[in-house]
Length: 303
Image 1 (cartoon, rainbow, N blue to C red):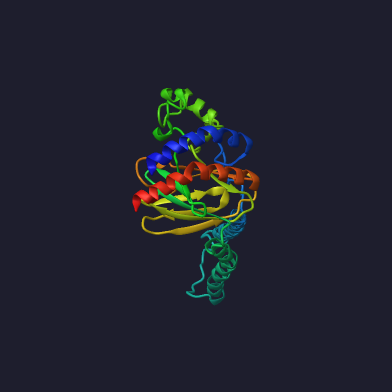
Image 2 (cartoon, one colour; image 1 turned 120 degrees about the horizontal axis):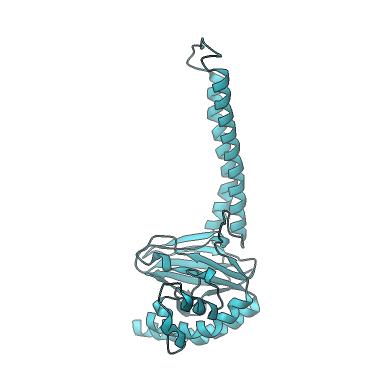
């Protein structure tokens, strides 16, 4: 399946990817000098960002309060100012305060964090269901409701080089960002800023629809994540886990395998394109025509 889907994916990626990439805004990716979160594109990500901000405020207040107490004690009770220290071993009001205070703070944080956690873990019925399999070192996506699948490689991986389809691939050195690789990225609708992020074949989903990802792996533990969606799930061989998201804005979003999985771990990017329902339906029709036969052939051969 790997080789058949790889060759088919190359043809489809080279013919359809550039137009779609140029039409969509690239939203979810790292930026130079960035020190905050990527833009939130789902309710889940927005809630995570809000929760993080709330906790940041709480811990800042605690740190300032504790530092203030330290400064006060240093100034008020140093040996010069207070040559004769008081002698006592217990002070009940303080002991009650430092016991109840953290309890109240933790309960307050829990009241806001647990609903966010439950919303992530309670998987709704998906409008689109995709099974994602982590492999060393590429991803396989199966649109289970439509019975087709394809492999997704880093753009510039040896599997994406086909001199017969694109003669300029003869000058491309895998995993090296040179002029030939920049030209390949440009032909696919990306810039050199998306190097190590762009894939030859992207996951395509409709905007404002619930997407359920069934995550597993074929060899070692991988992890599928899109920061702008606020989702991350380990793919464990022999187990099937789930995550969900509902993207609210059309665009291109990137992620990377987030579990150390071997020597080419750095070359396992994830590209998700969120498009309108009309564009998704058009893409789906072409994808079914392109991939469904290969998937069926593979199943027959396996049986």
